Length: 179
Image 1: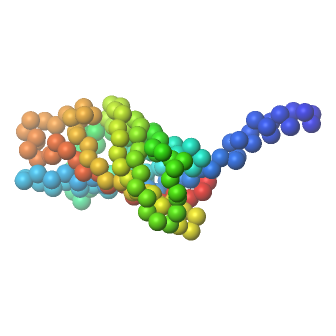
Image 2 (image 1 turned 90 degrees about the vertical axis):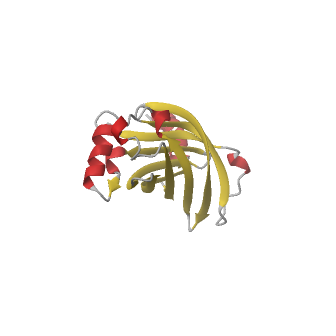
Image 3 (image 1 turned 60 degrees about the vertical axis):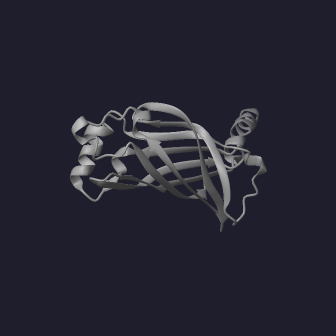
């Protein structure tokens, strides 16, 4: 019996010892500007996990969590463009480059991330820049980047192509707490 407990502890100990930071309330917003119409949406249901030991990061963004100022825009976004019933989440899984060389302090540090972004069922390897810092035991991160709608097979009807930008500005803000 003692032998089984020791074996279980040896197997499970690394899981408890991991240095994981987490949030379920990260914020992502996007902005699309055209001469005809500006489109903006925010989502405060972003889940993010950061493994502080390895510099690995993972995001899950529920598509239905995006809120628009106009209910009809939100409906069209979910039903016609993102098909959120078929593709309910966007995600990113990757790593912070040169993680072990970054001195994580309350001073904001620039970082580069590489990994796989999946939107609308299409996965692409991406490299983006962001910022990270730690304050009062919480890790803050942010990033601003652009996404080409066509890269993720989001179909826009011809009649509406002038209303929706081909490139969307994305902003992410996170505060992660130790799990």
